[in-house]
Length: 243
Image (cartoon, rainbow, N blue to C red; front, side, top):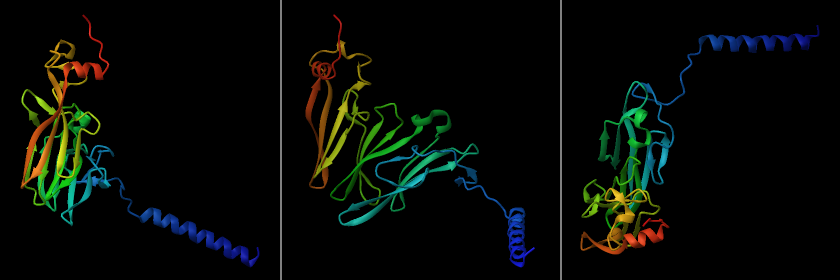
């Protein structure tokens, strides 16, 4: 055997021997995300925050500029159980807690136990946003919060007679200049009004409406800007009513 072939054979043996030694002595660790000592079972999509920088499936951070200074909002699932699912979710601004919910059972309830933080905007010193708890609709609250986590505005029922934010509609809230425009509804789903078919409502009943929150002189004032009657709703949504 030629000398160069012998050298090559020796090198191969050394490499293989080194790999075997490494495989026998190296301590392999599970690369899967762990929290509180448990393997996380939460998948992407269960932490719902508009325009957030996700670190992983259970935490993210969002930067917002308020009066020229950058603020940091952080969102995370915590208190993980042995089955790998969290029992709580927390949100903070600059390290100060402004939202906390426990008793979660995402493993059983799925998105019905998911909290969504949406529709962020800024008016003067306040961060405007909504929090939706679950995906059944009619579970959204409007907030205005300063950079210290103090809540200046918190409304779930926008008007009397069960008028709430229409959170299953596209663009249900917009922030422009010093105004928040919210679409609210008394409907449940697409055709139910006051526990009955909207066809049975009086034609002039207001079933949906837009509301404007205007910020002036350090406070928010609200007024109804546009209304949608049962008759208009039925026509706009092409609902066929019987005799």
